[in-house]
Amino acid sequence: MAVRRGRRAGRPNVVVHLLRGEDGDEAAGPALVGFIVARNVGNAVTRNAVRRRLRHLARGHVDRLAPGSLLVVRANPRAGEARPDELAADLESALDRLLRPASKGRR
Image (cartoon, rainbow, N blue to C red; front, side):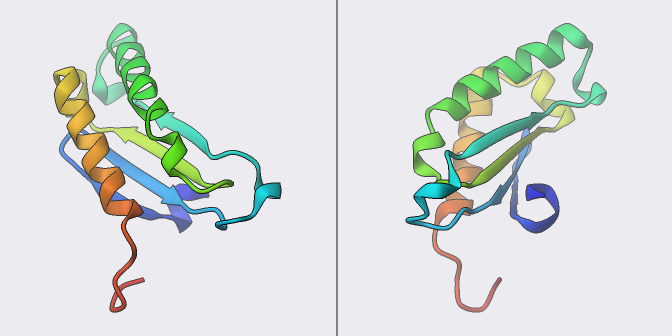
């Protein structure tokens, strides 16, 4: 649902999709985060390492999301060879772009 209906921000190593929950809606539950790491990232060991790295990095940003939000982080093929600081910078940059208020001319 977040991939189809949410906003998207792409970076060289990751693409982040966000479907915002309603602010102040406590019944919505906590924000949920999912990860997509396809075979083109690398073998199983590489994919799992990338997934673990992204999960660790996203954990620090969950508190920035509104309750009920859905966040999907998709690793690009370059993520398998990226340094941890590059992944962190790309994830933070994409999230910053998605969490800033939408401009009036765009949806």
